[in-house]
Length: 631
Image (cartoon, rainbow, N blue to C red; front, side):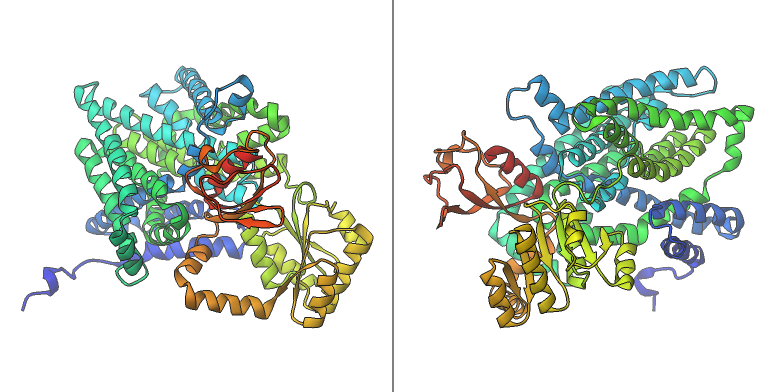
């Protein structure tokens, strides 16, 4: 009897076990030593470097080939997820729809992102020319391209944790980073092909990838609306078949194979375009599929890639600079920051010098793309081993320093501006804070229990230690009339006491309180405090799970990208117009209209009036675009 599927079991899994052990240890070590702000990939590179110097010679060549294949798969996943991280909706929402004026040009995140990238590229090329006078740089253009890269993966979570992702400042930084990623990868692809094959007609083959991107986007959008496809997709998505995950992996391999046929160095572009394509498809399902793909990528393949980067990192390669290494690395670091900081001064007009400077430091963070581009350059011999080692060091340093410098120059002011005040650090209060942050909303928890206060603080959430019944707390928090106050104390009587104090001492109106007892609920209602009956909420949730499970799961599982918002019409231009004459964003759906005390179901012939409240559901960027339209 032959072996199962003719597989050979004579494979040494020991090296893979060692690599996966390091991948598992990396985040554990960071957590134990409280280095939570240090990206895990840095620990993976460092541990890989240790592994390469002490155990690499014990691995068989066959084992190394297997690890190289898995590392390449990790690289492909990394580029795919880089494309997936870019929110296509946000970029589309930033496309100028009116005549561009001088003022609107500087306000538009997409136009400013393109301008920022152009200036960065010019500065990078000039800096590379200057450096080439002192060290040997085989390809000045390729070297300058490596320096203009950035890292959306570093920028996005920092802004999200600060609750700045939805604001104009956050959008400017995110789209600037996204534009840098997109343009860098496109320029890398054309440059790598030209350096390897010369300037030939075959260079145009790269456009096949963009043509395929366009065709797949059209077909994908049409297929999403086919009832049979939608039915099968929902039926198989949550079963063992995981049809959406399989379809996503198929899409990645299709683009990677097409890229390979053009040239091996084009794999980077193919994988990135497949991620960008999926980002455009997902919309409300984005968070769920991203969770699954993150699990595959960052759970297995990507850590192998970074561990292998560390294993192959050769410190002796830096010897090629001789004594010039003493000044080269510091100068390279200053250049990497400088070429991003100078164009960031364009933001001074709207955000002030300090915030613009802080944003410049944040977009200076580099990680996966700079390592990948340098590795490709090393293989094509347009990057020397010493330069490659230098860029790996710079990736580690910039993604460590950039967030620290950003937070130092632009400290998070939790007491200023629009915020939600949550009195009581219960698990519900903590969860609400996280969900509000996912929507880009600022919030702060007031907790009087020192142990619970420290626990919440360790989670990186905004929290102050104080008694919610003390009116001085709310003056310290600079509570504004528009701020919501959520009463989440363990005792209904305490919630009632705080509500009464807020009404009497501050005449505050936006108060929501949790309640268990009917008599307390009645007293709160008499004070015009909105109440949440726990039993009623639980009963409603169970009812939704029984009667409308699909709708309930879609809303809950995609809350961070698919939201419902109330938007009041304040624009004179919208007043008196019919809905059919208003160019609403296509990812925003108008559900209901509240006109005075009357609720209306919207139709094309429905007239909108100033003061009407629109109940809109859609993606975050679509909601923002709708707000700009009617406010």
